[in-house]
Image (cartoon, rainbow over all chains, first blue to last red; front, side, top):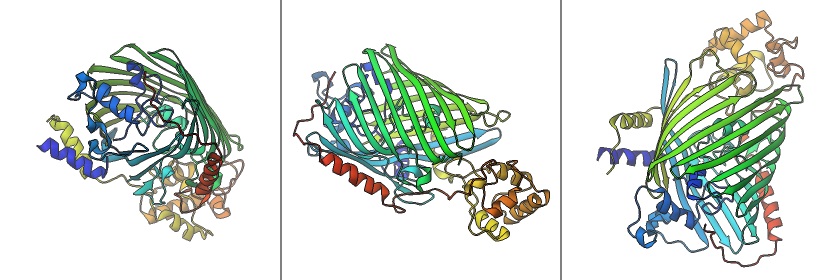
Length: 389
Length: 158
């Protein structure tokens, strides 16, 4: 009972419901492409009806009552199937949050985290679709905010119009979108996502993109017009971002990513005339169904008109082992070289998909930052609840 | 019903009860403006790095101020640290102009060669400008020009 109350209180703190996250490890089930299960052709975010069904068929620890007959439970639908939506409308409530403990030396900080509390929607008319999210962020995610507070902001991470061609294998989109680059992993604080500024928390940009999803090749190229939720214009980045991923088999892929942007002033360093580049390789491999290996290595380059320049790299290696249906152990190693020094990180986590669209995740992460070479490593423990209603 | 380990339960409960971490000291920009008779409040970015600009002051100027006794939320410690920098003519970016003189001149004391102007603090949201909506309207109009063919959307299955 106490555990149930605890879970309920977690829910109430977040004020809303599960983020359909991106799971590149679905390659263990032969899903090299993301567009089958996600509305975004490059993965992440709102699930399609088929994707919702797969959360019960493939991900969840509990199977549906009529799974043997090949039927999917109605409870995989919106609000656990309580509301039947018309065919042209796809909705999901998404929540991701919990508690974070950070320990550096003798200093320990514990705080709640609320990463996602979004309503996601897709309206379809023939080959045309409009997709948008609207949510609330207690802190951070300001680059996706519609309001201008230091905290407690209304956020819209994605909103775009898309038109599908050639049996939906080609999709032209315009609006605010995730940057197509590397692995679309759920761990948005991974150095490969942070250093390339391609995480799905608030690093989306406005622009125009063309995505392709073929039988063994997929990719997306986006022309970046800037993040128009950041002001003034001198901080906005313009350029391109894209990736191409080839699947030589149903259990293995290899991809290339490239990003180049220019801003009058870099948002982080405040250096003038900053050209930022990231180019990398990534891959996914499932040698046996329970095991999936994910890897990404990106070269990072930055140069400013003021003369400052840096060359570095970021890497991620992750192993996801499904011990038993719905229960995963995830180990990862990270590296980041940016400017002076090199940071190293290692993590171990457990993800448990209790039932369709409900998951728990516990992660321990140790990071040694390049900026504090003589300082103690930082240890983080994160407990998350994922809901997708 | 599944069970959570008591330690995990405690960590989660503690996390829910504790306050959020502190941000940059909000009274310091106004205090600096008043002390140095600046035409506007300096950006938080003169002392704080990263986005959002909060937490420990780690820019060259911020580090120098901390080295001279700056304490968060303590305005007196800020003013005495600034006075010390003024007396010592501290020049964190090594461009030959002291940090305090750069603040007074409206240039960034952390950026040397170009003596970049103090940049405005970035703001967020859609209330400051309608550019984003304008862009969306433009691309929407472009997409509307695409000939629409009604076609059933069939999810691909492997």
